Length: 203
Image 1 (cartoon, rainbow, N blue to C red):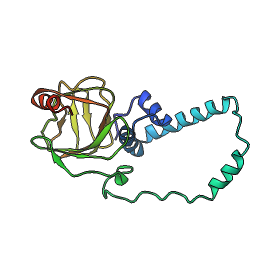
Image 2 (image 1 turned 45 degrees about the vertical axis):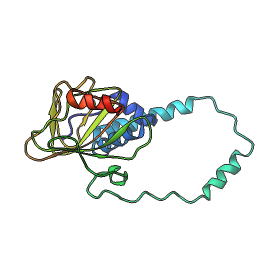
Image 3 (image 1 turned 135 degrees about the vertical axis):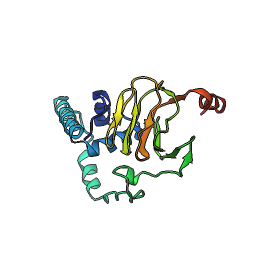
Image 4 (image 1 turned 180 degrees about the horizontal axis):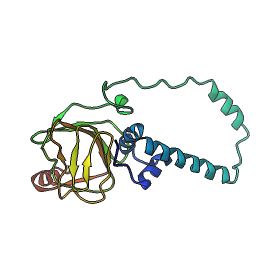
């Protein structure tokens, strides 16, 4: 059962299409498996439709109708091919890079996404912790397999983490099986030795 959801602000940004692509992919992964958030998203989209209906009509160009008819003859864009068997939508069609080690018991696989945020998959072995880090902007993490815990609680498959504060107590993969997550961030400040390396190399 899913217990952790995106904030209302993040869900509204997703409905409005203003989230950077990597963050939107993480949000969509959660929403696809969460009935509560799908219901909330439908309500937000309906409210947006009401607001559009209340706007004053705009004057159209003289050839607007002809251009609309011309577009009806354009071919429908093909659905991107499935690239990642075993991952839920939309991750199954997102280009992913190779796996990279990021410390003892943890690996990282970046995703290709446009915009001001980066993202990817992270796989952490049971009992292993992620590095301590802070945030410069929004960070979203959706659990795909396994579980992890941090200062705010335990996160199981389908749960979405949206931390409001820095990770002074780093997330730790729960016992039993490796924890696989999809994560996206607008900016991360690593602490300790990794933070020194991050500052030295400007990443």
